[in-house]
Picture 1 (tube, protein in one colour):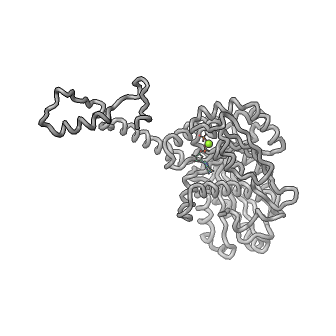
Picture 2: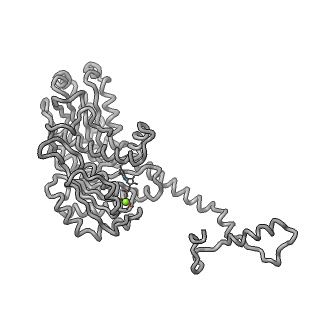
Picture 3: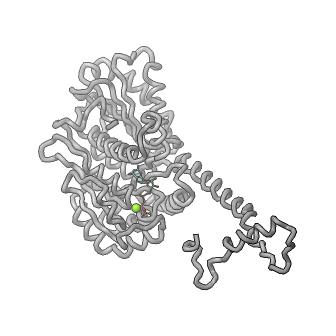
Length: 434
Ligand SMILES: Nc1nc2c(ncn2[C@@H]2O[C@H](COP(=O)(O)OP(=O)(O)OP(=O)(O)O)[C@@H](O)[C@H]2O)c(=O)[nH]1
Ligand SMILES: [Mg+2]
């Protein structure tokens, strides 16, 4: 599995702590798959092997079979007909409304001890996308006000008009209430898929989905661990409660990570690390294209082992990083730079979080793709002249036939087999006539 943890191997360690107990409410197939991957994160910590949990809500019974349950902390709840919502957001929403009684009971049972709950949905389908607004209301009204955020995937360009318009319809609604919610993390499937398929040209789509779900799970876990596990080095540090405030900041959250071999950093020459750090912030991990000058709150954590920390974490170094963050997010109310010592760290690891952002440029691209597809559709119905001319076609009566016109006589034969009828004719089913 490709992981964000290759240099730190936080997953295998028994000496880590987490900042916040996360619960994941998965909606629909994508949402449930990601939520399950997040709850399947296993550590070697005694009494904390499975630090997270999940409640999976779906309208499709078969989908649950495709999900791996590595922990008893994942529970599932089937709503609706059991056969899926067929990409219809009204069907998905109605299923959630009809199942609300049992959903609320399950949420209370599952998430009672959780510090923060993530609603997770893949935007574009019927179930997850359809039920996300109702899920927001349900958590808001049942004890999780301001203690929940959203993880939403954005569709790839090639997923088609229905998927893209479903996603945009719900994003429009969500953006209206964004200021009353906690953070929203957008997972850009187009961005992650492009990177994954370049690195693994022979991989299948389902391999990509599995990769992306583990990648999301690891990223969130890593961030949650970094803020709680290591010894602060120097004065400023960023603790779990500040991390919680960051996650509760309304708007979109952008995450980045940059790792570098400590020998490659030359304190006397900023260009040995600063522009790469800058690039990593702009590129993000799960999505990009944000106007970072809208940032409300930011945080940077830098981790190295003691030897490296002693050489590197000088006032001049933190000032340089601070200047970079300040130039990117001048209006952020808080933007601490925290340095930590992890005795087991190899290399230097920079984690940045920018919170309170507006929607990224990718949404514009999806609107444009949607408009392009709508125009294509309109052009197509205008230009379906073959069908139109076929509708005007009339069979010549026998007596009108010119016995010398062989072409007409031959077509007469085929015409009787391919008579065009409309499906509104009584009892006529074009499918059975194929
Ligand atoms: N990253 C990631 N994205 C996914 C995954 N599965 C689906 N998606 C995305 O989520 C979108 C919605 O798909 P689903 O979650 O399958 O849809 P659903 O909510 O089950 O809705 P219906 O099947 O119509 O009832 C897709 O268009 C994909 O872009 C997944 O496992 N990982
Ligand atoms: Mg489905």
